[in-house]
Image (cartoon, rainbow, N blue to C red; front, side, top):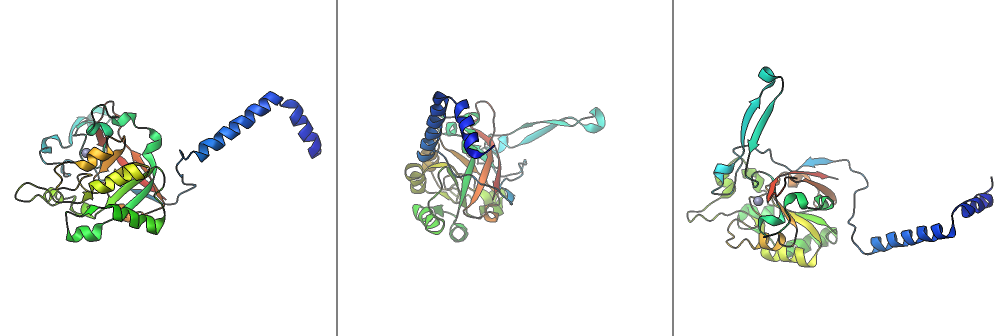
Length: 274
Ligand SMILES: [Zn+2]
């Protein structure tokens, strides 16, 4: 069968109406692409990096929350029952965990309601570990974001922006991780309110992450970063690990957040691929 015959046969089998419908669909798809709702996706990856600390009872937690650290109770054992099963209780904000919008927003989205499409995102890592090594009150500034963009290009649409301060080196020592002074004020890095505002108002992100106990820096009294990011419907991830092991640009992150009904957040498995 020669090509013109094939074309004639196909044309006779597709009604004009169907053909027009198909054309309209293709045009609509083109419009959706052009409207900028889609974020870049990886074609393939060769590296996988876990960004999650092991959740254990003695992992550092926010002051006053010690009572709500992870507790486990063995109910059945393979030896006695033929299978192993435990119950666990923990604060929703222990270990590597998510802050859902509802954590700081009355009526905000709880963790299980977050769009799954926003839990897979281009990962941008902003390094402030050199500054943080000298100054525990160091924070991510708008200039840090601009410097990242100067080096790697505009922040991708739907990015997850993570701060690497090097603070995870204290994750085995709660006192050092909290770094509390005599007045009870903590000192560890976080995002500055100005950087959070810039990311929410001038960029298109799905969330932000830190390798410390809080999205806000430790000395914050007003939690302005939480109050900028979460009410905007974005999520935060605290106590991330291994951010120095992933490229600052070009990786993607999967946020295995909790799907617990009504959750203010919860322990989360974060995995980067590139
Ligand atoms: Zn939290």
